[in-house]
Length: 588
Image (cartoon, rainbow, N blue to C red):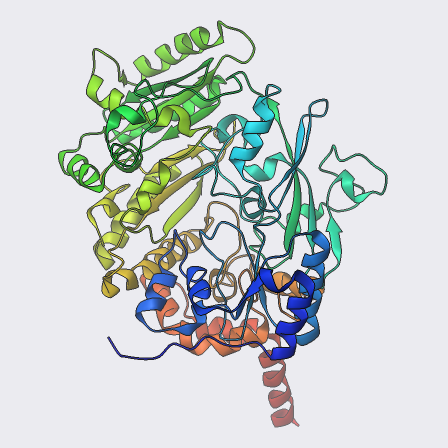
């Protein structure tokens, strides 16, 4: 690897001084060691590869930690004044580093971490930007409520950042994605103005309903990935919680550093009045048919298939993960149903009877004390993970470098498997668990009560020190999304818009990117808020096209789509105008 000194981009001194005056000298830094800690994200491979390539653009120019909405506004206004880009930062999972080589301000919201209120009567919770799911559950459960689910890592994931992405839970079958559970948002727009959605937008009206007169402005924020502004407060719906104020403990007690790797410390029972039913099926079709039947029956608060993820979530060491994958310890075609006794103590018994009939009809078998009891015991970490998710980051013990997410009817799982197999044959796996979803079920989440719409997931786990393996990750993701676009399907199951898929694939819409550009220009006239994350400006697109076109055209060729160049000429208004001008001159 080339020896090269990495020098972060620097802010003009007057910008730094103004920011320091806003938050105080203790809450702003450009210390190199601290900048480095913000430059390696946790569930994507790009920033790891940037480290290998000595690319300084993963480093922010400074880190700023505002404590109030007013301080966030002042920081954003300063960024606008000097036309300096900024990136909001919460959990650091993905999409939190600079988007170009310009000096960029990282606005870390960790000081804004309070649960502001729990409204028992209206069943809502209002939180600041850095409040996490664990805080909300802890406070709400005391009064018999909860927010309806938790994503990957309960305490790491922040409700605000999930609101700008989608927010998926194991219990999305009953409660939907996070975006279905948002009452209102308070945002600092890219210009520094305050923006509110829902009834909260009307002065004097109580924050209780997600709609207000006029268009649904929340849709401008959903999936915006920071380009629409910075979410500083969120009000979410709460639901009945019958699991008690405290989570169950493992019979062995809580682990310590010396014994955390022992399975007995990972076997807590489910919360009170909750039960998980695990079942396996002889083949993919049986699994999917049972999945739909269970969804249509109306039972359960959660319905999912796990595949290779069992080997991560339920294995206390990486060695155990590898051993279980090699031995095919967990069933290839499986489902689990989360049942809750919300309306009656007999609800779980009733749902089990309904489930019995469906499992029998589709030739399934329950995991039980009489059928693969050792597998059922190993699956115990899932008992609490739908409310207090702590095992998912075992996926990152080696390196989680991104994945492919599709959405659709339950059959989207088999479609996803076909594309994932093709990608593996084209690019080659980076690690044995990359084959999860190719040799067994993809991770399949029900995100609608009747399974009208579902999400599927497959992921990559390259060695973080293997540059060639890391370089495969982007082609994997681009290929999967391009293949779906070519087949008239959603490129990303969450429904978000993410570059380079937005501008370089004008087949979507068609030309939906032109609308996104107009929205961005209205909300962010100076182009400073996570620039180019959701949508490139025309100038950004033209600057990046020569760099990105070769890889994207390679993917387009693989899926029989037109190359970028032809679409670039048709989709860029200014170039098209020049062509018309030249044509008219020749005619004259």
